[in-house]
Image 1 (cartoon, rainbow, N blue to C red):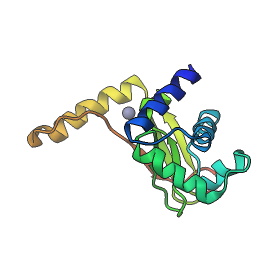
Image 2: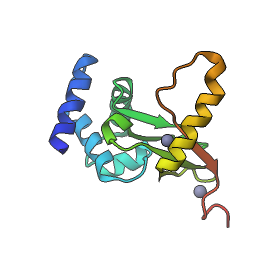
Image 3: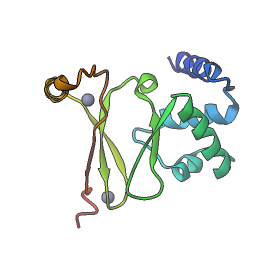
Length: 146
Ligand SMILES: [Zn+2]
Ligand SMILES: [Zn+2]
């Protein structure tokens, strides 16, 4: 299953005229090993010998190819994760405006149904066809509330 994912990443990069280099593979493996979006320094900390500058450059290539996505946070870092097409699970985010941490939260069928209905009502006058949504809930984590 992981091998199949790496094949899909390689194909996606090839479509963008990019190669699936060792460092890019290490970054994808780091995403697979974690259950929450990560900053570039956090990624570099778990990948032996990957310089920060190389991490930024390769993340930018992976982002342009649609393999990873960046979640904006109130700190300068931002957080990165695999796009849902590669992670395979649709979810929403809690984003702390105190410390910048981003936590994945499950999207329940009930919430998804309610969101789809609300989105249809909100967009029906615009002739807009909705294909997806991204929801980041902004607030303060338990630690930052103390
Ligand atoms: Zn916090
Ligand atoms: Zn959702």
